[in-house]
Image 1 (cartoon, rainbow, N blue to C red):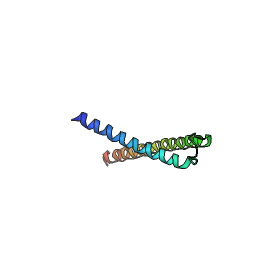
Image 2: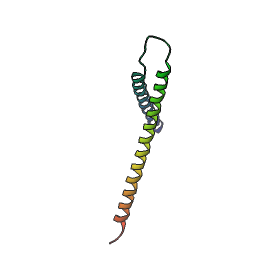
Image 3: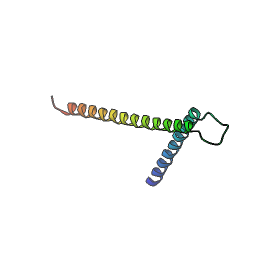
Image 4: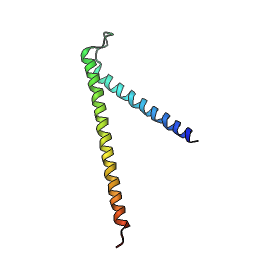
Length: 89
């Protein structure tokens, strides 16, 4: 039973990853690729797409850090509140 739950969670995470990957790919493609008259990827298109992906990765990393900081603060606040509530008056 636990193995099924873990496998289900893995499938869900993989689907979320694919959705995010597809969204980033589409956004960067729409923003960067402008010339469809040649099969070659132009230098400016390539550098634009690399820049787009780097920007997304940095943004995701920053959001994750802020999210962790927020949860640490919330946990500290709850611990402090629980400590105050646990003391006799």
